Length: 146
Image (cartoon, rainbow, N blue to C red):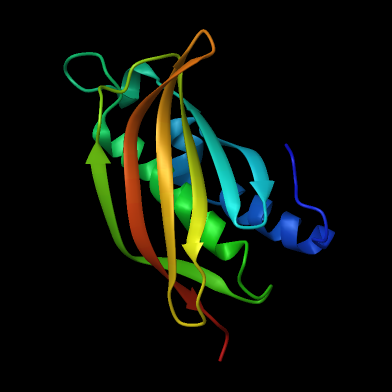
């Protein structure tokens, strides 16, 4: 997994620990594949248990990994003591979720003290060929200790 220069090991570790504690990501088989400041990548197999009736990745799978990718991208630019919650997330489904895996790439669009705008693009990957499956845009809220 790649990481960003200038980050402390504790910042990277915090994102890795937080992701590892998400039971839904574990259930889906999702993994952090890249962590950099303001950008996160999550890779997830399209398992039989996460398909819809036509054999494509269920939109719930696509949304879940996209939401996490955008959320962790937002968290990566927040103070180390912060946590993050999604306030709003919109999804545009562009193509059926086909492939061996889905890859969600989240990135911060506009950082802020109270709100962070982030997006995620999700791709179906078959034999190295990517198909753009969905794009998401959302608002994330920093949660700071009191």
